[in-house]
Image 1 (cartoon, rainbow, N blue to C red):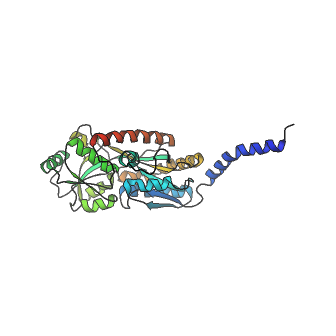
Image 2 (tube, rainbow, N blue to C red):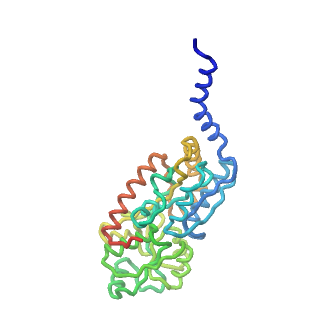
Image 3 (cartoon, rainbow, N blue to C red):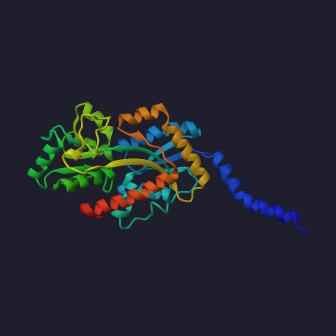
Amino acid sequence: MIDRRRLLAASVAVLTPSIILRAYAQTFPNRFVRLIVPLAPGGPTDVAARVMSEPLSKIWNQQVVIENRPGGGTNIAAELVARSPPDGHTILYATSSLAVAPSLTRTLSYDPVADLAPVANLFTFPYYMFVPNSSPARTVQEFIAYAKANPGKLTMASPGTGSAPHLAIELFKTMAGLNMIHVPYRGAGPVLNDLIPGRVDVYIASGSLLENVRAGQIRGLGVTSLALDPAAPDLPPIAEAVPGYEVMSWQAMFVAAATPPEIIRAMNTAARAALTDPAVKAKAELIGYVPAPSSPQELAGMLRVEIDKWAAVIKAAGIKVN
């Protein structure tokens, strides 16, 4: 005869994990959520993260707190999230630098694929080439000529070693055959402070600096996409001066790898809903960002492709690995 009590206990043991996950997903989040930004306040990544935090706070009915953790080529923030409790309350606002880390850092203390779980892609966007108003260059071609006439004298800024803008300018330097000095900063905000007065010579960055161009503070020369960008239709593709040059960036949400799938699905749904908010779209357009939501699986696939792509670029460009 079947022992009903044992049968009931066995059934409960099998069902309990899935029931717990569903219940947890329904109550997520049950306190404030930390959105970890890997760059300093004031830059475009920080701006975009704050744009996302507003609708997410409303959707979750919990405060989404921005926590800036710059440094280490964005690895400090990524490791923090990778080692955080896997409950969805600590989110990495990742940039495409996440795909670069395995190739640039020999002593990487986390694995972007094994230690982080993809939640949703958020934005894609091209970069733009900017120079100070004091620069003699008014086109990409003129900048290349200027740099070749002054080998080893021009400085190219980035918001951090190994950041996407750093690789973008390194790739440009290599493909254009230039000799320039890399000057890394701790975030995009400090770069702008030195770009405006001409303390650095060139900076490839997101469209957040287009406002500074319109204000007459700096000059834009080109865009890193192969086609004209609606956000700045007067800036030609850099590829017109450097054939084959193209860089597109992205920003996405990741959590600790062991986060329950039910939580990740709930977070993905919230992210998709936030990206349909007209206010989010309008604010994103101001800095040249395009909402590009994805499933966790699509983001995982994209990350793997990006890791392979940038590994090849780093090797071909001869970028020094830390």
